[in-house]
Length: 117
Image (cartoon, rainbow, N blue to C red):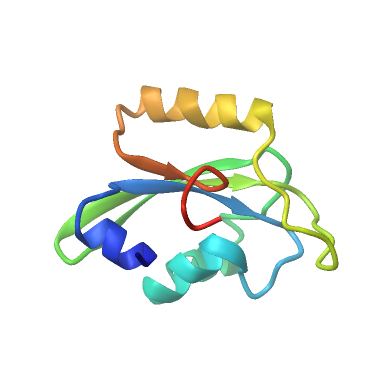
């Protein structure tokens, strides 16, 4: 199942995705979703709204096909492209889960904890 299919078929209403300071263009699941949504996250990076700094967390609601999808973009600092892509730390996961609860979101895919990783 691809990411867009999971969103359109309402399997997920949103996603928590990792963003690294030194990944340009965007990579991983964030890059795939960005490509499918016509560069919405790339625009936010270019504007300086998303930096990828360690533990930065941004809530980005995206309207697509008359529906709103919810994205939590979690900064994870620098990454070494020659190594395996890092995942959320336990502390970051706790922050993501807290934010999901605060925003009263349901059916959120968390990068590193799904079939896409």
